[in-house]
Amino acid sequence: MSDTQSKIDSLQELNSQLIATIAELRKEHADVKAENTKLKQDKEEIEARIVDWKPSPRLITIS
Image (cartoon, rainbow, N blue to C red):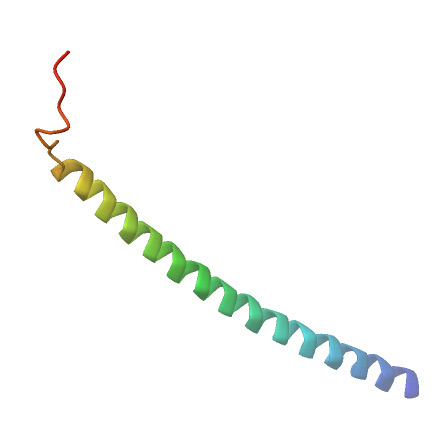
């Protein structure tokens, strides 16, 4: 009986550790998704600025 209880206790501890790891990974995943969304928005804004960009007459040089 003691051996069985020891195995149960060990599995419960392992289960608790896995639950904590899953919670950490979920938070990390949410952070990465948020950062990815922000980077995609920044990229779209930069691409829009490039499309709308018109060179200043001062920047155009005639050789």
